[in-house]
Length: 272
Image (cartoon, rainbow, N blue to C red; front, side):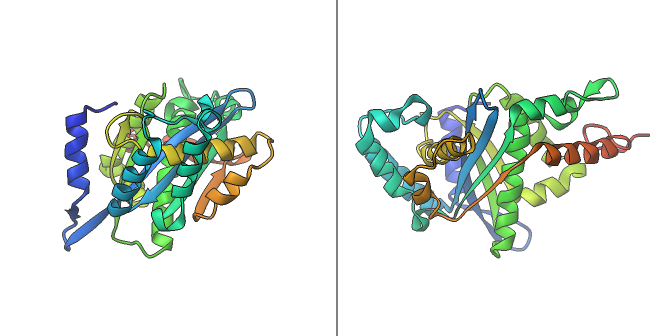
């Protein structure tokens, strides 16, 4: 869902504060994520950057200044070649002091769709597990939450922001919405989930999607066999955790899901 600007403003104000957790107050971190795809090779990726509210405010302002009169910046449209000076300014903003960490997850969409075309009852496995986009949305949430625990950020929750407009946005939104169900409490806790929102890339508070787009594009470019660019080496100065799921790993997940759905329905409720 793409949300109106006045709602985004309220969300932004809300996340600039803190949330009660029954023990006191919890700080909310922000993950901004964008996707990149190569239709020929099948590489499909979501990458994002995690930051504090103060980091977000600073980075958002600096990106706006770097863009100048440009309304946006899109790697897939070749803006790094059309506007090399702006590109250089943006790269110089993606540094360790500006961001807590980067994250990226990918699948081969051709392999994913083929494996999940297998049926479980009257439905395909994709019905149960979701599209490749929905799978990657949940995956990046999981590794982001795990990173926070590994780095002693045990009380912080995370607000997730994804670029709006992907055809499978509704599928991802529905599956992440299940986190609120008691049966999926483990997913919510793993992701340290506070909220999720789909933002228009050139809409309010969306500037910070641009660094995620740059990271996603470079990692996808490398994964499809292109030479690694110097810019990616620079980007990886920011601590970055990424997982490229192969076909065997997807098959193992399918087996796990099939066992679960023999005893539970899609909403996670035990079958009678």
